[in-house]
Length: 228
Image (cartoon, rainbow, N blue to C red; front, top):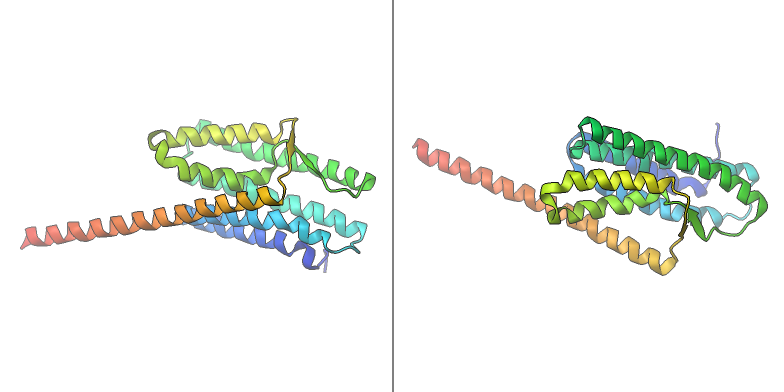
């Protein structure tokens, strides 16, 4: 069988599986579940590098395979899935689709550039990176849930805000600036914030579903009484 099979890539594959499930959810209209899957993909991706580094006897081929497979999965998880979520949210006009194409393209360019730089860096040093160059593509797994959580503040202009966020994120993906990697404490806080956001989204959609169900029952009851 082609490929390298060990525990160092398990979380990467789980991230990919989560994003594909998220696509299925978006296609079937369950956007709250799709956003949850996006957040889960981000969580898995956060720790896949840490898990990979626990294997001290990795060959050069295994290291390069890890870099490539991680970026290929990131294209799907944090490039394609957010585009699908935004499209089914309502970004379906021509300018919006242009922004989504630009977003996905910027993410692809970023990941390809990262692969080149990271392979060269690993040949020169074994030290961990302390800074990202530009905004990491996985940041969308934090940004998008927070945008949806804050939608009640800008309900009337939500799609405008979503367009601007996706456009700005695309620019930041390929921006030439240094972005400090969060330490363990900051990472824990970030995960907690996203977890709260996801729970809120799930509860909000559930509450709205129950609310509409009771409205349907109420209308049916009124119709029944009117008919009698």
